[in-house]
Amino acid sequence: MNAAAKGQRYAKIFRKAGVYLGKGNIARAIGVLKEGEALAKELGDLAMARRFAADAERARREAESAG
Image 1 (cartoon, rainbow, N blue to C red):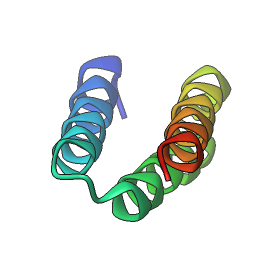
Image 2: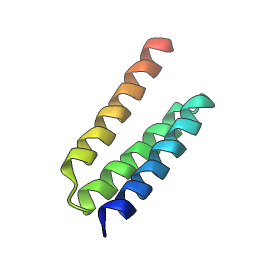
Image 3: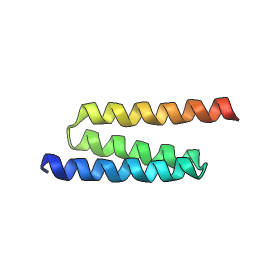
């Protein structure tokens, strides 16, 4: 898969997670980010996998502090 196609897939995942976060559905957003992490690992893109994991962790912490 070329870099442009990867970028499009990652962007779609981040947008989807953002929609769920905006609606307050934190659990679903974290699930989407974990799916993105798995995809990035599958594609051998460890830097993006770490970013997805970090964003999922950030969302989890914010949900805990808000709740």
